[in-house]
Length: 233
Image (cartoon, rainbow, N blue to C red; front, side, top):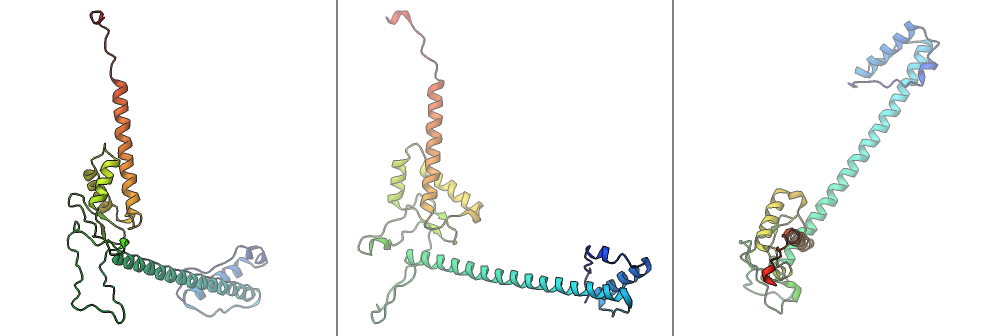
């Protein structure tokens, strides 16, 4: 059996009170040998009775432990499957939204179709949200790309950059986007998804805008009042 212990429930202490110290010692020794390598128990009388009870209890504990271990393994396998399915779904959604997967339709194939390959994080991407009827939005070459949770990167559009500069005039938006990129690279487990990255950027810029307004207000309050000069009357 090769185990490191044999359970000896405390509830048996009072029941084994009639045993002499010698019989008790024989019982404990027999249980330890049985638990270590399965040595057959050679006892009689009360010693054999209590030994049988302890071994039955031991088997009960072993069965419960095996059931618990099996339950944990099933739960672990299920969590692993769910995680793989979730990441696979996120990757497929990101690929489709970036226009990286060809949209093949049965009976309507396009010969010599070229699939765009993105090699530059600042390269413009097609915008599929407009139904394909309008020009794709161009990514800003001045704005750093933000790493995402699925391993891809979010490229800031020229229009988005202009909107943020207008909404947060006290903030150097390009510099803050660079700090966001560095923060995401240093904290990979806290990166945002493609759906949540714009909210992350807006929250960051909003906090920086509030900091600068607060600092300016403090400076204005700290200015000394101009001394009164009688000659100015």
